[in-house]
Image (cartoon, rainbow, N blue to C red; front, side, top):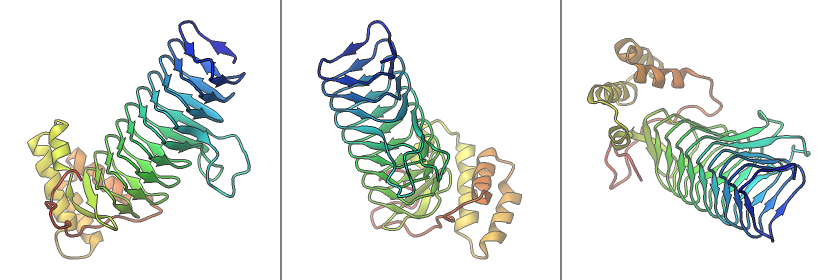
Length: 280
């Protein structure tokens, strides 16, 4: 390895390749494999049987549980070994059997995961995905390539997200939901094929959003998704009526932004779920 700073611990059975950079206070457990392009910042912990392959950077305090793999080549037939990478922000937790693939030449060449995220057992993050800070993926959530997820999003267990889908910040995706289209910020989506069933109200309250902010978002949601007429007309009317509110303006900007997948539209909540439910 190029650099092993003091107070790092490496098990005798671990393999750390020349070229890897290991920061201070790191712990690398039994039977881990750390490739030559890996950079572990201060205090990273690899429990055991972890594989880091290719150009991988783990931020300070990242914890990786057994049998996770990070940085393996993308599942993309166009990929021919070009230099691409994975970047993971500080304090993120990656649990057992998670797979995170490096970027591809068809994207920006990097898969990014932000700070303070939690990827539970069995999740898959495909090539060129971008996850913001404080994202939680529950067990066996699956992200196809080029998915973009904003800050503080919760994705329920067993959910599957189609390639190029965007999910706005503070949204919630119900468990076992197939997400084929973009989900607005602050939205709650669920169903066999995801439909918007309201706002992430419980999440907004837990995170300190004020009553006026929530009322503005609810009014804008009803204007956009619960009133008759052409959607483009409703979008313009909503912008005119509520667009000065910064959270509503964020939703409108998200809708107007370029999209490969189109917008997830409103539908009835599944039986047993409230119209404005937060969590699966």
